[in-house]
Amino acid sequence: MALSPYSLLSERSRTLLRIFGAIIGLSATISLPPLFLAWWWNEPSATAFLESFLVAGIAGFILWFPVRNAQYEMRLRDGFLIVSGVWIIAILVTALPFMLTEPYLSYTDAVFEAASGLTTTGATVIVGIEHLPKSVLFYRASLCYFGGMGIVILAVAILPMLRIGGMQLFRAETTGPQKDSKLTPRIADTAKALWLVYTGLVLLCTLSFWVGGMTFFDSITHAMSAVATGGFGNYDASFGYWNSPLLDSIAILFMFLGGLNFGLHWYAWRRATLGHYKADAEFLSFFWICVVISVMVALAVWLGGRFDSPVEALRHATFQVVSNITTTGFVTTGFVDWPGLAPLALMMVGFIGGCAGSTSGGMKVARVQMVVRQGYRELKQLVHPKGQFLVKVGGKRVSESVVISVAGFCTLYILSFLVMTLALTADGVDIVTAFSAIAACMNNMGPGLGAVASHFRDMSDFAVWVCSFAMVLGRLEVFTLLVLLTPQFWRD
Image 1 (cartoon, rainbow, N blue to C red):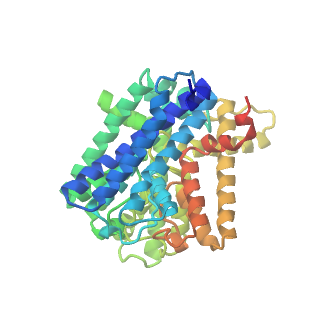
Image 2 (image 1 turned 120 degrees about the vertical axis):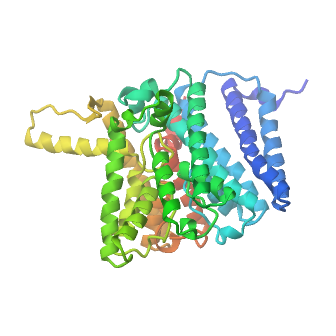
């Protein structure tokens, strides 16, 4: 009797194949809601969504079905492969509809667009977004929605167990609802709790936008993007399309909430209290960073003559600071032509990012806090060589292993940024565009400066692939992906 090719694989390989096959199939189902909408609105894109669903669904089934009963106790090392594989596979699968329907992208550009959505970056290669079929606009927003929730679950339930880049801080040091790295005893229960809070915020944001003057369709798509800090919109002008102080204020609120630790939101919903927010050291730092930089940018653009009144300057500055620090990427007027320090400051806050356990990108406020305090400790140590100084967060001591892990993370983060920036300059991209393109992608922020201030359409295929890699690298907290590139990882 002929042996099945699958029988030659180890149980570990069969289990990995089962997981990846299931992910291909699940990724295909993201095409179903826009498929229904395209059919309902009688849009030609229905055929593309149906073909994408069938191709990916059948491929996933073929991989999954023969090994559906495979069982293997995954080791810690397997976690890195699974997490990275899941995100890469999901991006490659969800790129298909962008090729098969308007805007008919090449596979390189389609992967970039899908990566931008799932990693909640918000960068795009599409020009004339408002002319796309409504089902495609919904699909782009849904990528942000599903990617945003995947990020929260990744950050809260998975990365702490992999003990990378200081994410174990959740388990050891963070107060409140994230004790022992999970909100509830099992990851599945954690995921359900987070889905409930996340979806509740999206619905509340949808209602707020609708009441504020958006159409219902614009409300739900922009709500999915705002809470996920994704930045995909339905218009090339982004929020500048409405020029509404009320809608800007609503967006600021929900982008800010998306940039907070979702464990805090869960705790607020479960206990009907807000007191724990002001007791959280990371929240307080994040809040004051937003306030101080917003005032600084507002002064720069007002004194520079960009806006006529200080109130208008503060409105646009606050919107853009919150959008960039939460790595959402929405814009009102665009900031590339703002005077003085404003454009560079807005790019730099993306490196800080939002809070750990949020949908935001960047290095995260908790890590920046820790690196700054570690630097201050070194200064004190120079003055008092025999003194014993501790690094504390929220009044609690941070272990040396976590401090070293965070320092290593920040070092690799910056080195990766520099290497990819050099790669773009080697491809002929000017320095400003290269710097801002990698900053926008690696920090999952979206808009940049220079040639990528509005879109990435004019970048070469090589540059687009580098930027796509940067988005995934930043989203997976650097270590998760880079560890797969080391020979030691593949040795038994």
